[in-house]
Image (tube, rainbow, N blue to C red):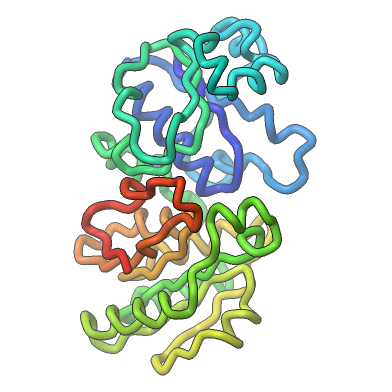
Length: 292
């Protein structure tokens, strides 16, 4: 069996599921999700089963302990994060060693526990059609979302995502990620406008007031600001219906663009995914996307 640790927001959960799905598929074994970190954690919830048309199998405490023993404990997992104690992990407990694609993952055994973020299409590129099926939205959009969806599908719609929130308010996250500057969005809008006719921008953000005060769009645009809390995932659904995309350095808009099935889509991504130079983001963005 493959057990993958699930943590973070929806975009992160999708990457963690996708790599586990790919490993389980290659080994023809079952995939279980370790969701224990969400217990008592008020900021995030486990969303995969609620949002998508997949039946996830959550790993029980007994299953996790049966696979990795003492390493399943909170203290054990904390200790194993220390690089100097890596020798204790053994061959069936794998911690993501870097943010870029790690080829060694392909050599993991069919019974293993993995933990990390795995933010690269390369981990699941060979089963991308399966992943697209798993990440289909089973519930049709209704009400105002249905109206927006109809408009999006009738024009040259471009999603534009501005991520701020903890990228601004949390010091560690801010130091690692940073936010995309207005210059990036200006260049991206200009690039798109030269490639397609009559672009209409649909702006998604967790800080629309900042966007309205700092971004100047001379093209037709619409703010999508009504989906929040448990309905936030509907923004990703709407993004995926757009023909083209300008994404932030965010896994949420990454998936919104990736799930778009338009073969001729243009996806603009920031050249610098991380603010911190210690991270190599060369594998974060698919090769056919444009980095600015």
